[in-house]
Length: 54
Image 1 (cartoon, rainbow, N blue to C red):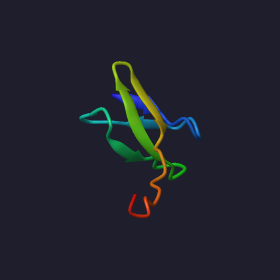
Image 2 (image 1 turned 120 degrees about the vertical axis):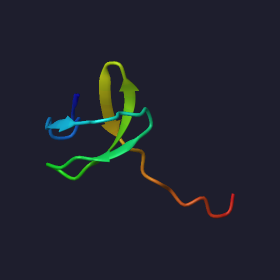
Image 3 (image 1 turned 90 degrees about the vertical axis):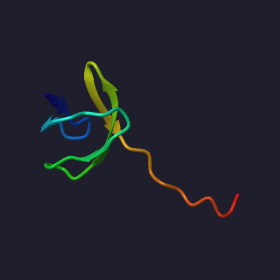
Image 4 (image 1 turned 135 degrees about the vertical axis):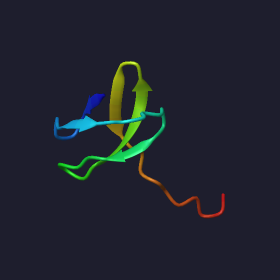
């Protein structure tokens, strides 16, 4: 199973895709989140922000 990196259009092989999984693109190093299993779709993972105790 393959998905396409939204940052660099590289083809990324996924063995057991799980929605919400974070994947690193082997070509550009972007952190990606699997947002759909059928069809396979990747999006840039949200950046973690500090909550400052809120």
